[in-house]
View 1: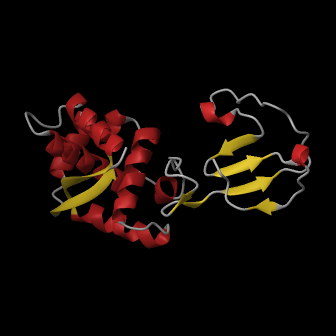
View 2: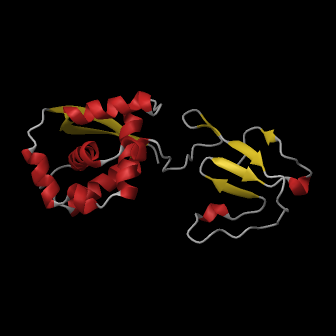
View 3: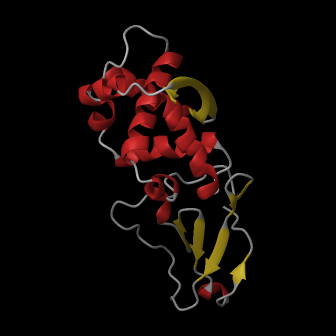
Length: 195
């Protein structure tokens, strides 16, 4: 997908809040923090609460000092922000870049006031798609399961992602659990998984 820069006028308090989360949750920078917040908002919040009329009025009346801030976010997150701007009529006729920035301001406003930082920054919500040895996400680790009989194919649990059911492996977040009993493996840990 790739990343894009989005400029947003946000409360200074929001930028300070994001910066404070970086060392606490060992995030590489404020850009990762804002991507975590956007992903949390997409998956865990009611968009009416974040972008609805009451939220817009509250943000306008807050009177907090504001600053212009550029954030690097995922392209699909930018598209979602643009969609929210249009859906909730956050602005009239503005460019795509401006609409994403307006919606991002609402996300940050809501996050600072209502989100639990541990729920936002302490949970992996998006699986790395960069490869097994991603410099950002780190190497994937394979753990063997010695006490399970080998099976040729496992069915995915209801509601699980489609990549969960396949021969000999079950993908769990960025960890890969692998049955090596059939291949003579024991309970040892091996190096990065080759996927």
